[in-house]
Each structure stands twice: as structure tokens, then as C-alpha cells.
Amino acid sequence: MAIIMDGNGRWAQKRGLPRVEGHRRGALKAERVVEWAAELGIKYVTLYAFSTENWKRPKEEVEYLFSLLVTLLRKKLKKMLEQGVRLRFTGAIDELPGSVANFCHECEEKTKQNDRIHAILALNYGGRREIVDAINKAIQNGVTRVDEDRFRDWLYLPDVPDPDLVIRTSGEMRISNFLLWQIAYSELYFTKVLWPDFTKQEFLKAIEDYEKRQRRFGGL
Ligand code: IPE
Ligand code: IPE
Ligand code: MG
Image (tube, rainbow, N blue to C red):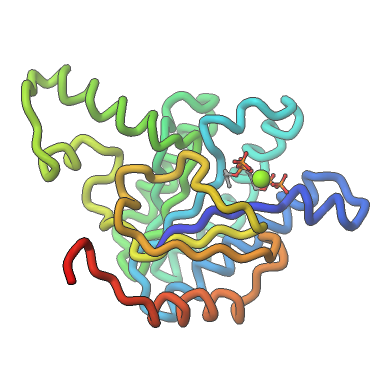
């Protein structure tokens, strides 16, 4: 499963709160969603936390987002270890400020033995960027020709299966440069609920909706 966690800013604005308060509440919700997914036996959940386009936001908001990430993960790392969560990252991680990148590697290292659920945070992630990075990596390794399977090997996390379901909150009906290669045949679910308001009931509703769909993958 993959989730575009959108609507934090609007959630805060509606309440007369600063946007960053929406991000704080949104981050707590992300943690819950990983628990809900693990309870259901979902093996991989990818959460879109910061896109390559989100650098366009005011510097203060961007800085807050990264400090929130580090603070919250630091606080929750022990709990995640106990719960069997393997924390991973996807995106141009090494272009994040040094301390953030190091911290991401540290979280991956510390949780790498876990396998109840892979919680993957998409950070400084862009789908086009991932594809271009993959092509450049392949060229640097002397590859002159790829096919679809071998191309996948150059993506950030080749072992992570394509999402069956992509959920986007906040009513926007777009992909915003998320997992472009991987969602070729994913089912899409959009809800108007703003991310900090997302509930377990909403989560289950999305899965129920998904279960009713008939996936044909181009066949009959
Ligand atoms: C999603 O919420 C979180 C990030 C993109 C970091 P937004 O911050 O995009 O919230 P809205 O869309 O402005 O309401
Ligand atoms: C997508 O949300 C990115 C994340 C949720 C991290 P945005 O709020 O950045 O997307 P747009 O700008 O509405 O397309
Ligand atoms: Mg948004």
C-alpha cells in the first residue's frame, strides 16, 4: 500500500492554527497508520512525506518538517523496534541536510532485522527523479540495454512490490509525482478527509473499496 498524506495545512488553517501544527498531527497519524496496516498483515506501506517539489515551500516550513521527522522518529524508534517495524526510506536521501540523511541511515540500520512490516518514508522523493536516477545509475554501471524487469533493479527499492492500492487524502485527485513507475496498475482511492482527520474507519473503508474492485491488468 502507498499513501499520499495530504491536507495537513488545510486542516490547521480550518482551525486557525499554524500549518506546522497540521504537520505535527499528520506525523502522529502516519505512525498510527503503520500500526493499522501491520495489524491487517500488510507487509509494505509507503508514505509520501516530502516531495522533490516541496522545497518550493517557505524555508521555515521545510525546516520544521525535517526537525519533526527526526524528533518523532527518535522518540518512537524503540517502540517501532518492538513492534517489528522495519523503517526504510525512498527518495534522494543523500541530498537531505547531512544530519537528516545520517539519521535516516541509522534508522534503517537499527531496524533492518525486522520484517513484520516495512514502513517506507518517501522523503525528497520524486517519481521522475527516481526514473532518471535509475537510468543514470544503469549507465554508470555500463548497462547499454534494459528490459522492464532489469530496469526495476535500478530503482531506489527494487525489492519492494508495486503498491496494490494508493490512497490520497484531502480531495486532490492527482499523483503529484509519486511512484510513477510502480503505480502503473495500482488501484487508486481518493478521499476528501484531510490527513490529520484520517481514521481507522476511513482506512478500512479504503481497503473494503479496493477489495470490491476487479483488477484485469489488461486482460479480460
Ligand atoms: C501534506 O500536507 C504534507 C506535505 C506535503 C509535507 P500539505 O502541507 O500539503 O497540506 P495542504 O495540502 O496544504 O493542506
Ligand atoms: C504531495 O502533496 C506530497 C506529499 C504528500 C508529501 P502536495 O501537497 O505537495 O501536492 P500538490 O502540490 O497539491 O500537488
Ligand atoms: Mg498538499
